[in-house]
Length: 389
Image (tube, rainbow, N blue to C red; front, top):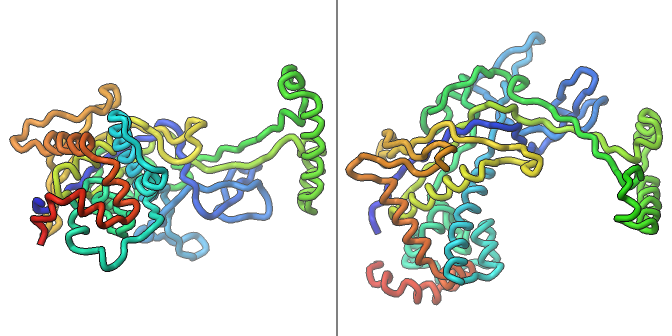
């Protein structure tokens, strides 16, 4: 195995539709003054908040003398890594499909989610087997198999490219900083009214499409459900909204990042073989082509385009990084890889190696790693074991 090399894949993206990354905590939306309270206030409707990060190093003092840290929206590293892992899984599966090969549901789940259903016995977790796992591009990059291996990539939180986040990413921002400063300037609230058209019974096609008896039973079931769940607060709300309409409408809201904000995504790859860097580059390309991140994608939320990209080499001793080359063409060009004039074209070498890896990977190897079958692994890597101490 070649000596490991470290690289940073820097991707700056721009939102072209509102983006919603759901936070764990909930808030309320005050309809009267159109403000979000980042806690459950006494008045207002429930509001799903967007994921944020506190900028402690920019702590400020309020008029009341209390100290607070400004908040900025953030794309969690788990969201980015999940999309990249699934993109790499899809690349492998496309190769298997093209060769009329299949894998088991359990193996697919291990690849896609990283959740193993079994574990390699301690006596079988030898240096030879771990070395074989590191040799494999997918397993080395993403880990999370029955071997409980660490992944050999580090994925940072996606931060908005503004003055407040300067210097917090692995590498400098490539795209221009946008003139946003406070969270309120970067987010907006969408109030939703969900209607029950069956209960409303106004659509001309409803009775023929669903059937009168089914509609009648649905109305009875909904009435019983409403009666069982009705609380004192619910009764007060029902009076305020005018009785019948409360049964037909559900009010809620969610907070989302505004269109036009640049985010910086950074991925550090420890590449033991050229195919390792290449597979991650192909996964990133796939995510760019998909062009969506976060929740409510079916409603058109979370769409983005590439603003800029760059590959960096990382010195393994002092951690200093040097810019190597731009990586991707723009959206109009389908995010194709840019041709490099460098004598040692890292990107081309890595992509070719990754494509060879995808063309040759076998279901037996995937199943062996998924099932923690050390004997099957040794058999698959029989030729390589001779060179492992």
